[in-house]
Image (cartoon, rainbow, N blue to C red; front, top):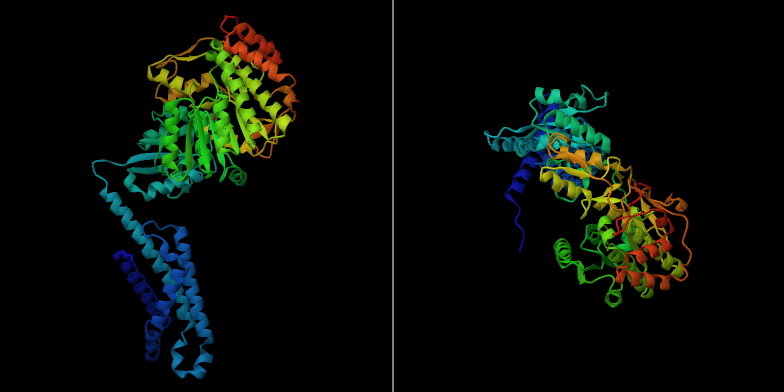
Length: 636
């Protein structure tokens, strides 16, 4: 069945033909001062069909007809200009070669078109064809603006940041009056921009002028439109917006816009992630594609915060299959359902399993033959593992041993274990077990020569049990917000950012390295609490109190990302570091881990602690308490 050409396309075609014909006739009139001689009238009539045909063909070849007139931009006009220019050059070539043709065919004397008429035609046709498109856009936008209810006055927007992001937002608002917002002007701290006019809007002042500008220009919304503001800058802007009586909004992130989730004018409230002020991550997509495309990838802890995001990131590289290993049925169901909905052609296998179940894990690996294993399953809650050290041993150490041994025996090419900054000079059972897991991965990599690595990073925002959802719950309940110590600092990273770097790290390791993610500068937890209270529309210490409760068992004031002896150096990726030392083969590890397993099963706290200290000497230096109530060392 043949597709019907919309009537609108016929109208546009007839309009283009009319514009071309009109421009050609007017070009002759201008060339001959408004009075075309009789012989030239015949030449005009004979050449008109040729001009129309050549011009229509040039527009088609240049792709000018593919662009929507309704959303015409400068970029859309470039093919049009090139098409008219090509037509003028073709007509000039015909005029230059006409004498030779006329000598043989005298009836073609109408091809002696005046060069002046050709030049004038080029200017006129370009102006009229471009003008028609621009007029169509202006009329459509005016119609949309008229369609907006007169009862709902558009919200007046002040844009903070007159850089590329701010200009893009301003243009988007100007082209979309139907969204019910109008840009009033810019605020920018660059003195060179003060008083300037950008895309039709004035730079009204700096951020310190926000309270006055909000009142003077009756601003409804203050929108932060800065592409990559640092954390301190974001916090300062938020405070100034609060003083102006407005809760700030922010433009969507680039990944949201590119992913089609939102447009530039869909502003959202400032989130805690925006306070990190981290630069966008640049990935080596070619290396990741080589690692993941068409391969089988197995993810443990696939229902958790990190595991599920790793699965999402892997899915975007079109692997052959993703095997999701998770022992929580609801969590496994949720991520499996999401991936199947988002990637209908991808083979997603939901595998209910405990990583510590050796027969089950060997069976899964043997059946699916993954090229890469991403091991995110672990117990991570510090105080909870202080109360249950045996479970920390079983899940963080022994299950890792089961998985790594099975992977090495069955020929898995790559394995990445997710570790934590708490593994550095650990003062908690959780940190000690993760350090022990790092050492075992190093041991197997050194013994087999396989590129098995651990990736170490700090806290991720929004993960289960992290400080952010706890603060959100406390703020929703009216406070108080509890912080353990006023000087406590932590490294933070968003879950997508951490997951992307984990995948990138998988392409960098040669075997046995502990790769460390560059977490930027540590953030003071008390400052984070204050910022989250302000983001919720409250004043810290007035509407919602902050209470300091004291360090919990196993906690440190400051976390570290590298051991002194590791002497971390940057890899070829600027945000991933690696230790240059490698742990030698671990003699007697099997017997030692059997003793640790027996103590864990028996929940023998004293023996568990002694064995951990024998494995991890730096853990012995920190007197972190277990369930026996002894005091922890406050810092590291």
